[in-house]
Image 1 (cartoon, helix red, strand yellow):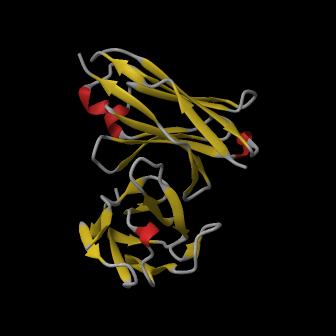
Image 2: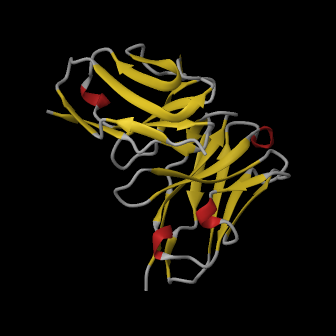
Length: 105
Length: 117
């Protein structure tokens, strides 16, 4: 069973900063089933990235995904106030990472 | 517009049962796998179960096998989760989500299940 480990657990940042979130798989995986979600307090998760690097419909261009093998990355080029949230990676529509909280510094 | 609306949550005693429902609209329900995901208070997301378009395949996380049953009614555009032998650790918000093969592209707002005496 694939285990996804996200780091860091919490990331204090300021608006305008560049963000890089990591998702590491316990073994080599194919890229197509790797997805990223954003969840704000009291809301359902929202799909951001699928296939490791494809933005979902309506997702701003400041969000990008990359990676292969065991290491995957979600990048937010310039943090907007509405981007402070928890981010999860997921493999094959099932296994989730434990999440990274992006909080205001 | 794709919409998923869960209902049926509530307070139930340990060992009790509950049936969650999810109504779907805005897409051809019978063409998609569907999934239940849960989130315990203050915790991360946990995949619970999914079901194939025609109901012929159903998969569960180990912790709910033998206790939970996922089902669907394509004529009614509805997804269900029958939960029995409920435990305190099943307390969570339960989300239904559309499964676009490798990712969950639309989610409902969730329904809270609390297992407590």
